[in-house]
Length: 275
Ligand SMILES: C[S@@+](CC[C@H](N)C(=O)[O-])C[C@H]1O[C@@H](n2cnc3c(N)ncnc32)[C@H](O)[C@@H]1O
Image 1: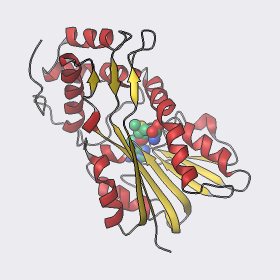
Image 2 (image 1 turned 90 degrees about the vertical axis):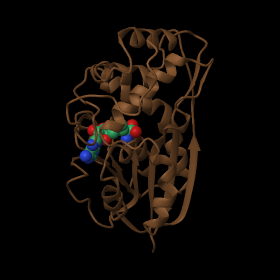
Image 3 (image 1 turned 180 degrees about the vertical axis):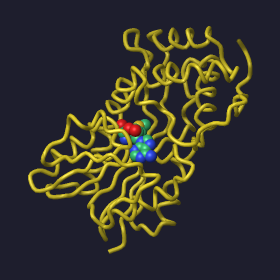
Image 4 (image 1 turned 90 degrees about the horizontal axis):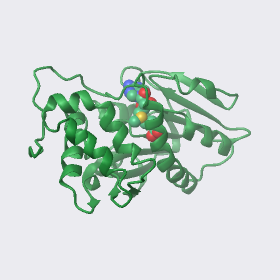
């Protein structure tokens, strides 16, 4: 199938806005684990650079599996603590411990505590919300004066980078992007973070941006793309942008043992609340 990628899939159904990934989907835990394996070490390196230390009180918003919150709790022990907050705490509940509190809360609807934390972090969250500006403001309000906000979101500028060149890869990634956009996702939110954190009055704004190389492994493939394509399969097929043969061929491509993909650019942006 050689249909050129369109920006919006055609469908009669009005899209739901906001976060559309499904915690009930059978492999969602595996999909999230494939992301934390790549990004947790990098996030922790930035936190260390910001001075993360014993005694800090941290908040991870949209904490997912809680793997990062757990690592932060180890870093801030014994006097510090971490709140792992998510709209769906199914993966977080088994982790609850004296230094790690889990909270079920919809951050688009409910306020966060004010001026309570030394570090407020979110990763791969704000990019999903049409009202992402309000949520960012809510998060910034949760840090103590002089404390840090660290926001990490993708910019899809590198999402089509692949070697050898592949029309199938381009069409599949473009179709996945279209499904997200239809629900209010901003695929270029990452690049706007420095500007937004400065505009929100934060100081010492800094950024680290990295597009991680991900190899098409014959055994594990590229779960970050494949599990997204599998979860979105009904929307991808109904969009008409790709067909079942494309979905099958995408899996083959991502297990071929020599293709190299580059992940979307992960933009990690931090800023300090005025003292
Ligand atoms: C893409 S996952 C990222 C998880 C984690 N931050 C990471 O990078 O591994 C987004 C997480 O945000 C949570 N989430 C989505 N909408 C939310 C909301 N309105 N309020 C709080 N959490 C939300 C989801 O349940 C999911 O766990």
